[in-house]
Amino acid sequence: QVQLVESGGGLVKPGGSLRLSCEVSGFIFGDYYMSWIRQAPGKGLEWVSYISTSGTSKFYGDSVRGRFTISRDNAKNTLYLQMSSLRVEDTAVYYCASLYGSGTATPFDYWGQGTLVTVSS
Amino acid sequence: SYVLTQPPSVSVAPGETARITCGGNNIGSMSVHWYQLKPGQAPLLAIYYNNERPSGIPERFSGSNSGNTATLTINRVGAGDEADYYCQVWDSSGDAWVFGGGTKLTVL
Image (cartoon, rainbow over all chains, first blue to last red; front, side, top):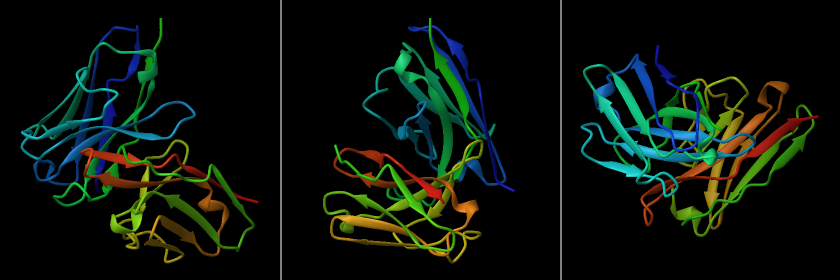
């Protein structure tokens, strides 16, 4: 049974930092490309970041580039998102998701239930 | 950057057919994926590569994609289909995954 479990969310002040984790089970984590996707309150889904299987290729959305860093530990079956210089508009539920297959045009086939990040003074 | 446009809401009576559109410039040349979001649950892949159904998704769900519009069709809609639905593509010119704004499906 595939499971993706996010953790690390919480309340943080503007300008602060937070690290999210996503622990994966039920499939060979090292074989899957992974992403972070977020949903702000009352808003739609927004892709945040992507990482290749080896971690050598990374992409970021325009709104987080330079502030967020994606990484992974294949030995621990865990995906990370280091968030710094957080802004009020980063407030959202953050989901980790796996990419089906090896291409960038592939769908996000498995998702976690998300972790809430609230940026507020 | 590439933009996907969805109607904010679609309402249908039980047993009827719901059609949710996703508009984008020449979207017919792209692979479109659809996701179902229900409160408190992990998002679910509903349709991928325009018209493929993952295992566990009822045959009532189907997709099409041509020209500037992709469509998610749900036949014989039931209360359990009430959810937000999002379309998504890969924007190769921007190296980014793009989602539509989402459509809230209400079963009357």
